[in-house]
Image (cartoon, rainbow, N blue to C red; front, side, top):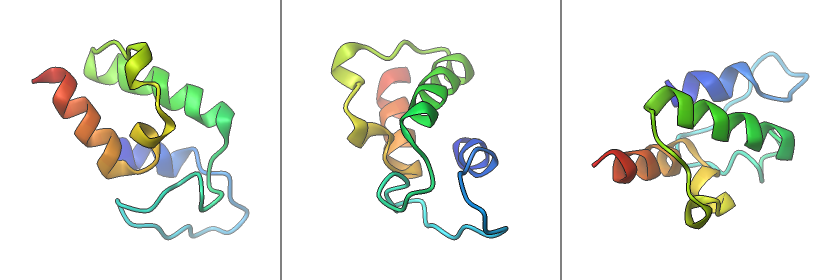
Length: 76
């Protein structure tokens, strides 16, 4: 789910953007800060969680696996 959302919102002119679930999507230049806000909203709505100020570290949103890890901790 998270990977599909990221893939559908990539900022690339190339039809194929390759990245692993551990790649930093911001460092790779696939997304920007506006996308970060869309991603935050998507995570909260999709997983029915609230992202607290302590969770707002960009590192938590930098890769598919980091997002999944943060969500898993929040719903546990």
